[in-house]
Length: 108
Image (tube, rainbow, N blue to C red; front, side):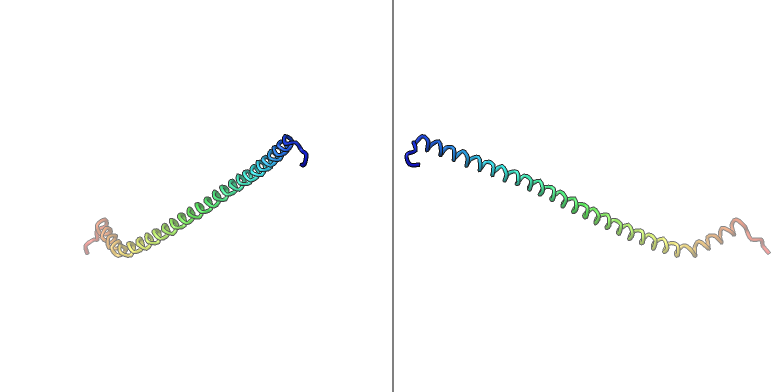
């Protein structure tokens, strides 16, 4: 640069600075683009993870409701069987009494 005019030196420095600024701008643009892509990927991953968790939670609720329904059904069956056992002897006596009322026995 010896003998170079100060004006040329300034223009060279300006050109070098402009090139460096453009390089940095392009680099930042690539980094921003990469960050946006990664952010979109992270959002998609979070949404999928949320769907899986919600689905698993829903399945656990449905499973628990199914178990509760089976327990209620089982208790109902046991209760119905017990009621049947309790009223069976009475039912036979009621039928006998009705038969005697509807079809009176002839006196001997």
